Image (cartoon, rainbow, N blue to C red; front, side):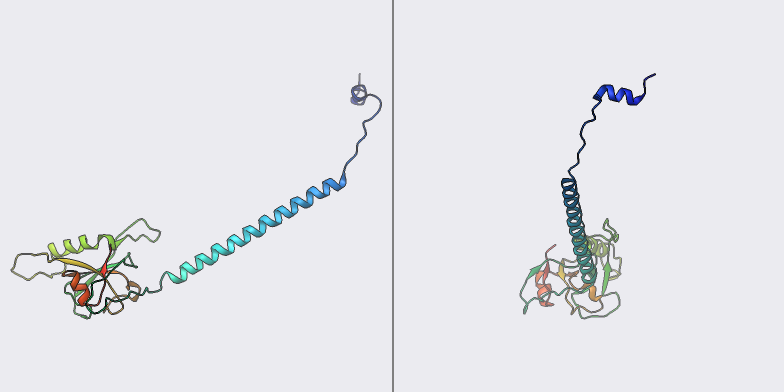
Length: 190
């Protein structure tokens, strides 16, 4: 019976092939791999630090009230609302009144991470329905229900009884663009 060694010797001959290793090349290749892994680890760490920083900045600024420049002296201006998750329907064109039921906050469900939707986009329709169906008893008793012309304004910090985080939200008032200007508010660009 032939052993493995004999088979190997027959295949290679009686002389063994010279085996030589280039240890310098092997070490250089290993050093390049270590440098490459180190660079990737540093780049990954830097990217993680940037993402954490941006996330922290977003977290700390998300609740910061936005400033809205009031309309100058009865001049009609238009701006986009900065707060879109809440909006208000007003009974009268008065942001200084704290009367009961003067304004009602409206928010809608949505697909955002916090479950809220774009109330600013829907507020004119919602307030129109509220007036038509007299949800808040704003209609005069005994008279036919009338939906007044409605205008969307962007609320400033001068608006009474709103959450300060809602500065920059839309408020819908009976009136037109000049109504917003008379209250020192810009018209909402929805």
